Image 1 (spheres, rainbow, N blue to C red):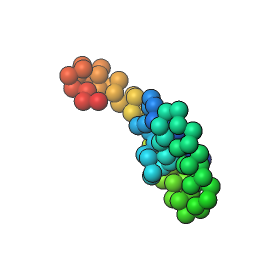
Image 2: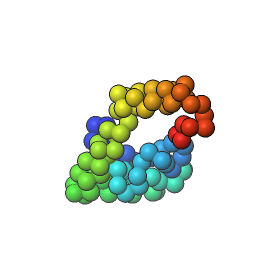
Image 3: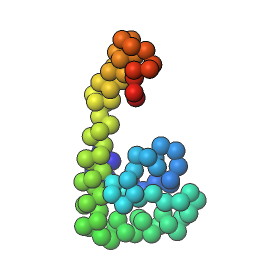
Length: 90
């Protein structure tokens, strides 16, 4: 996603929360090679779809930049040190 590549993945684990189906890539059912093949075909044969997914994927990946994630983790630790778990609202 960070390189502007639409992602096709099975709807398992964290991938199902990271990929926005039809927006940043596609989620396919687990162990469904036909669905996977169909989504690959769509991306390869539809340049407009491919470009739209690629741009959205790159935009979404920015949210997971290490500098941003690091700042968020530090913020959680600082709030925990100041006020304990009750005030974290993570």
